Length: 270
View (cartoon, rainbow, N blue to C red):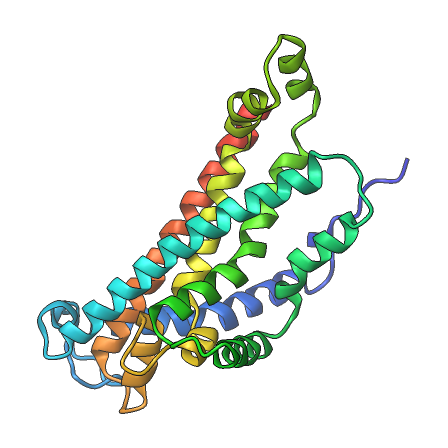
């Protein structure tokens, strides 16, 4: 029996890996480091300082960024929650109702937003809202975010459900549980790691989105990414680096939390 090929032994693998990591993370590291710069310049280092983080919360632009951050978190929580519920129901319908004629088509439609360029989704969503004369504002952002967050929530939920054998529910119904009781008391607790991971992924996608939000938001309505973009057009300031670092830290914490949940589930499943 042939041994599995170890990609790490491929010539140049280590160098290519380091190059990719540098390209991906070096710009983020520069932004994070210079957010602690005491100088008002974004290129000249004058020492360590937290002045720009203080400026984010107490400076002349703090009110604008606080309102934008509040909008971002409210929309992200609402969109992620709604998308997770819809994704859970969709996964249950696709994976727990047996084979049906349009099953493959349904999975394709759910996954379609992942393959369509985001700019196309943004333009189509804007045209749709204009066609039905829906006034743009926080609600249009929320509806748009729910739509494109569903496939991101669906992926970990469906993956988790595929790993759960139907025999658990069948055993519960053999013990006189109804389908509802088997779903709520057996399937849902087993699915919970996938549901939490789906929620976190949808939350991050909604919180960080700029392109679709910029198209469908109304005048005077800002989320944190659009507020940062508007401030950058007037010139990059150190306080923008501080805000970007805080937003990056939130994303990293959420991703780490999702990974820990998945890791714990793998350990318990052994």
